[in-house]
Amino acid sequence: MTTWDDRQPIYQQLADLLAARLLDGQPGDGEAMPSVRTLASEHLLNPLTVNRALQALADAGLVESRRGLGMFVREGAREQLRALERERFLHHEWPRLRERLKRLDIQPEQLSWEDPR
Image (cartoon, rainbow, N blue to C red; front, side, top):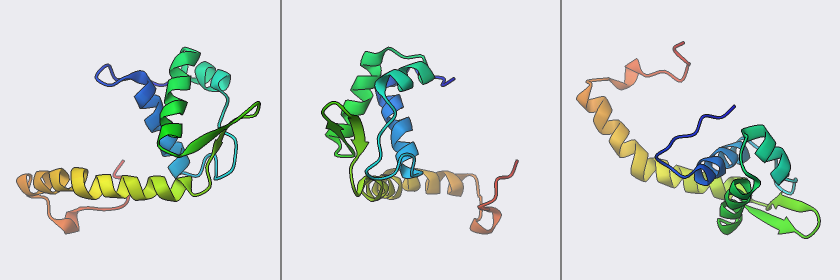
């Protein structure tokens, strides 16, 4: 079960979760998104909340509605999303992270790609 953060609208959190899945290739370009009913059941949400999350993805140009068939991932959505996320990371997250590393005196050689757990 997903735990939701009270500081951000649930539909936006769900849209972010679905976008992360798209980045992972699930589902792939041209493939159907899970149905509103499936997502609502999976995340214990109101179908209207799920609709709003899917609409946010549609507004971003990542998915499209096909009458009578549901929502489908648009061709090139993964690459479009990857480019947007890279831009966000490099210009918004990385500068703050770099400053925090400096403040904590963490050197690049102390960092690892491996999970420390």
